[in-house]
Image (cartoon, rainbow, N blue to C red):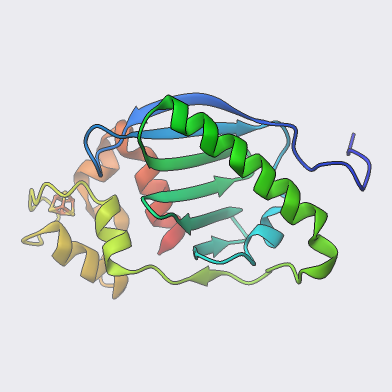
Length: 178
Ligand code: SF4
């Protein structure tokens, strides 16, 4: 059952998992599960500043944060480069407030319906393993990032990203970005 029109969109986003953040050792990735699907609010959130990519078909929206990224799917949210669980919980709480505030203002917003892709090279590079292992045939991860942005390579050609389950969220974020 849908909540009444004027009630907050979300009650909460539960922290369901953390992973080591390989982009910045010592930091973590925080994964949250919203109390309601984000399907309806994503087109409004996609009108906010700092959107890197929006894929309305897959329901994937990524924002650049001051440090790291925030990626939202209808049933999951991912914060990268988070200091600790305490900061993760604060970020999830702030995200609930931002989602509810955006939903409350939706009458004044034109929902985004078109895909948007504006990744920067450093954004792409920061999501790669950064080991320069050369398995993709490029001399460095930076060279691979350039080739990805130019559409000459695909994300799955980075073998570590394809095979290491710990990197699954980064793969998904990159695929949504590119
Ligand atoms: S395979 Fe991936 S980790 Fe290895 S150099 Fe290429 S982009 Fe970097």
